[in-house]
Image (cartoon, rainbow, N blue to C red):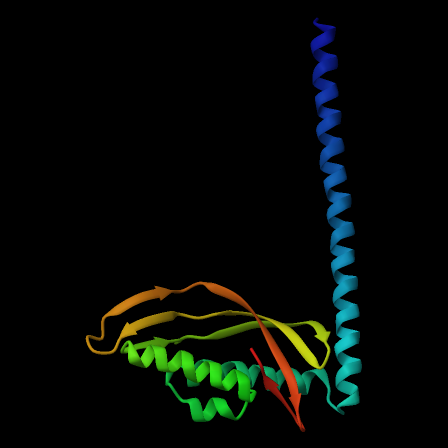
Length: 173
């Protein structure tokens, strides 16, 4: 029997087993590191909100309401609704973007919006940053012809910045 080929095959089997085993160990370690990081972020946001006499559950509900209200108001060109939860600077930017759409006789519809997850990212000065993971049908429509110019039906991730304005947290981009 060819002893050299048997040795070669066993060497490859051991090498592959080593690679698979190492990958599993590294994967578990990365998973533990990610869980630890998430726990630290949860503790950080809890401490921040505790100073505000809020719980994460209450604050998260407010973020969810803001997300859905923003999508609906954007689709309906309803800047008056948006003004209630946006900072003044961000409100001006949104009004400008909506004016551009209206001048081009276009409308950006966002039907079938589904928020998947809100994750606290960091506190930067007086700003709280959250990762928003969601899904929506994003449609750009010509208002004169009702022709659909663009459609995207994929998941998306955005980073939303909130700042404290008196006794309210407002979206700032």
